[in-house]
Image (cartoon, rainbow, N blue to C red; front, side):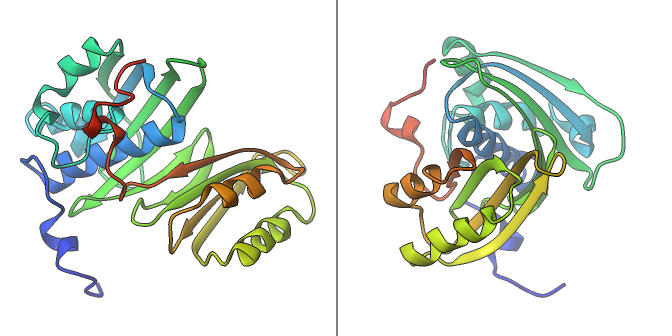
Length: 236
């Protein structure tokens, strides 16, 4: 395996005990929170593989709850996150699942938004050193690492949509580091995930949202400080 950087080995700044089972889980929860776009009033969390066997001892459940509150991996409130989630009005449950998944540290989250009632299903894996991969969003197969600012575009699978998206990127001088796309069926719903070299601007999001085939645009940026760190948006 090619060496990337020392942080891929020792993990991020975090509240322990494990970069895979705690820090990675917190980042999955936080990614799910950002994809949902609002606090969750309901969260059903199902652990698989190694996560299922050890989640209580390693605090994986508390890490997921903290991520859903948008806490970063080094937030001192992580050990109390389940209680804090309940105080914020989140009904959160944890369970163990069975089945084959791409990595032994896998978790599936089913969320309901507190403000809009939006439902989200998301599956993520913690691949080591606090690194993650989101592999499924609402039935779309994706690859979202959280290492870079990411834009998720829900759109119809029409001819020329990707060309329009990349043209918006070109005009805004945004470089795409990685792209993944999946669709439910021909000319049906599709999801494109773009990992960018720099954070998306309001102007970029506006221009993408204005494209005729685009239904919604969401942003995941795990490098930005959590709003909850400043006491904002921590309650439904």
